[in-house]
Image (tube, rainbow, N blue to C red; front, side, top):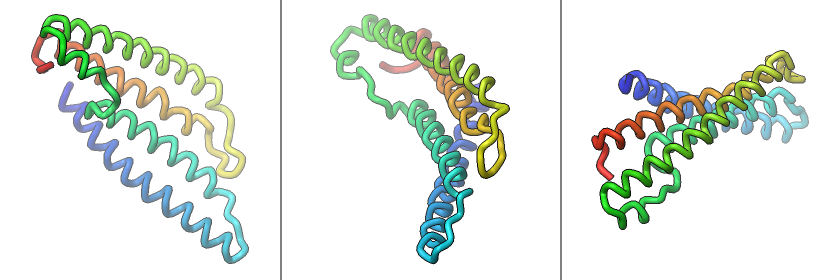
Amino acid sequence: MKKAIDNMYKVMDIGMIILSITLVGVVFINIIARRIGMSMTWTDEVSRLAFVWLAMFAAAIAHNKGMHPAFTMLAEKLTAKNARILILGINLIIMIFLGFLLVGGIEYLIQTYNQKTSILRISVGWKYMAVPFTGAVMLIETILQTVSVWNEKKKI
């Protein structure tokens, strides 16, 4: 399971590169087009879609690498047992939040999936799908981290 998740993060890394290039390229093309007097309306929708997925991928990858703010200073001052309890409690709160994010994201996706964007005429759901997808990825990652701390395989 861990190997599959690691492969998914590699795909997300590649996706972030592609989305970054797409975002910069599309915005640059539109800037040049506006400068010469012709605006392309589709670029706004493409850049917005790329930005949402890019931000959500970045949040999931940062979560995987432990780059989000953490209470490590407090945990370092506690005994190993109390630090474990603190980390398990924090992970439980994170899992509850991610559960709400996942459920809410799926509900919103279901509500908006039949709506079409005004220019590209694709489902609005493609944009909103980023939230439940990355929410599920972060939830799985948090569960794996919690199991690792529970089994004391992860050093505190």
